[in-house]
Length: 446
Image: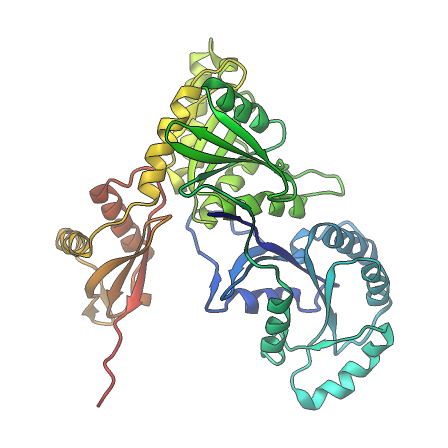
């Protein structure tokens, strides 16, 4: 088993050059994983994209624009962040507007990096426009310009093939023992992630070994507890929004999110003293966008030991803030005193078993039949929606496909009903459950 990392690919460029259009085209690919999880904040400007042999995390830096800043100052800072943090940079310029002083300034900055940079000239709608619109951009003196229409798709496939050729292999670096359970510890800075890992490791007699270099900005520890091996991933803190120039620190968030793509279970720490914040809820939302199992650890619970009223209030606040993932277990712990630490491993075991559970197709079809007989699906265009059969298409998390006569017509409320029915009937009370609808394939005429 190998721990996985995915390259970070950043789209940079002036406003309105087409970064978001290209982002949308790349994430709409058939093989891109962009999951519309209900109840999760929709402000993201990143997506994990899986190609045939490789994967990468794409970020549209338009998502970290600062309204109160000059365009030149903002784009310089944005480009510098991308140069520092990304593995590959796609620099987008506007073919219709031509080369601008801002573009030249960013090219000068990019020339000093050893990172791979793709110089992309957008808004070139076809080969007949290419010679005319590309010619001003040769002035920047780069070996290759990539002509593109993010809107219409011209040059897109060529760009994607070039990008894929420069991506590192997805599976790399450290070999892990077979069956290792990978755990990522996430949360805001100073919430106690490292202290919690130390408390977990110090609680029992364990074999611990440090693993260096599995990812930038995370520290991995391989741990043997009982019959199982665990990889503990301590991530960089995800900061709250502020009024300083680092605003949301999108790149530091993305580096922490890279750990989500590598783990089975995310352990998200919340500070009992501060309560659950908007940023905590976002972190929890990210775990569901990545389809991870999740355990919420309320750390520093000892701060509330004499305040029963506040204990109850905090639990209610967490329940209200996490209605979109009410299945996630919540444990009250203290890294300082060791309270509740002994419950962490048994809970991890239960969650991991459910996360990887597989069910026979016959039992699933019986479940579907029961669900439909209890609550008939609604009508669509004068005829009732029909569900023919279901099957489990993957584990981690348990994911089911239902073949229907009009899959796009299934209302979210009925989908939620089916998810809850599957969850209750299959005993999947601790993990995300996904149900997708697909159309019945028509037989080819002979």
